[in-house]
Length: 473
Image 1 (cartoon, rainbow, N blue to C red):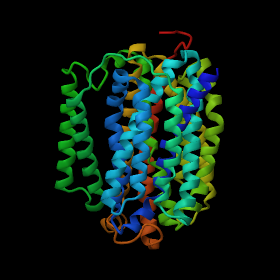
Image 2: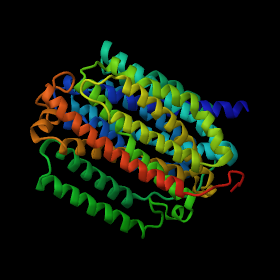
Image 3: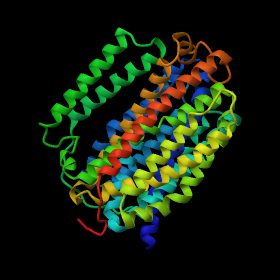
Image 4: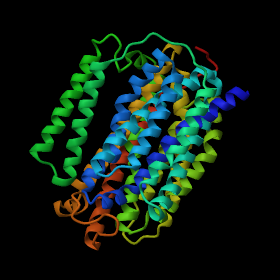
């Protein structure tokens, strides 16, 4: 039990690091945008490049964990993430920051793509829900700590230190991981370089086209980028059917519970992960709050999620993922409905209430859905299933930001979109009442699209069927 406790702690720290960084950057984006005096449509790549690298890297790095052992990839990921964090904090231009964030993301992908497989390697199916519940504590605590530290550091110290905060944590995590993760066994596998290249090209082209829409509206130029990106994506799917070790593990789609759980994770990310960004645009852009004050309004949901995660993880161990995960998605949908009632001068208690529903929904969904993936994955696909889950979730996250900012910009006049996204006025306090009112309409439109996607995810979650956690594979 002592070894298992240490292993859980290692995984908690790894998840904690990534979660801290994700929420810290969201809160600091408008400050970073002002510091480098650049356009929001450029500075948002500080977020997008991170998601893009993770989305492409997770399945391949999970597979690499099979080949050279998960311990080596997991611990190396912590080291690279730590170095990338230090370099990000030292950036002198927005382009340097975007590049160093790519390095940081590569380390995060190494951690993410192997953490679920490490759980599956070391815990039986009937106990994995509880362990994923504890790792949910790491995510929620990290996100909560990121919200608090991001608000405090960005407001009172400087945005650079939102990256430096990862350095001491990373050094400790690296040493502790070396000491407490078992080497594990090597499993013969092969990387899919053609597939990864086509996927990276497709997502990058689609992301660029989507971001260009925010500044220029729908034009022949960005429509061609979206068309080409879609064609490359179709080429990627076609190529995957002929390579010996495809990035898309088609065997997974023969297992209903497993495939529907992964689709649910993708749709949850696509429909919900940009909601915090939209709320920060509202709090800092429309309501002119500092990052610190904004963080206080977002905090309650993370506290609730940290407390309830392990409890709902145990529930999934007993009854399966179908009911808890589906309920979680529906409750997150309720949170979006609550956020959609915001007005330019409405009480900010609405955000606090919505965050409570967000915390309850996430603590129901994540432990149940993650454990369903690993509980229903054959042992020889642990690494691939874990990596593919993270890949689909991170593609969903990338898509969520692109869809949300595109919908928000297309829902307002070109003048307002140019004001907000092309940097003619500062988002943190520089928006006029007219622009603020129009931008809120765009945010609301984006929220309703997110809600529709989330409801489709709930349908897939419910359709996954029942499962028997007592079965050992």
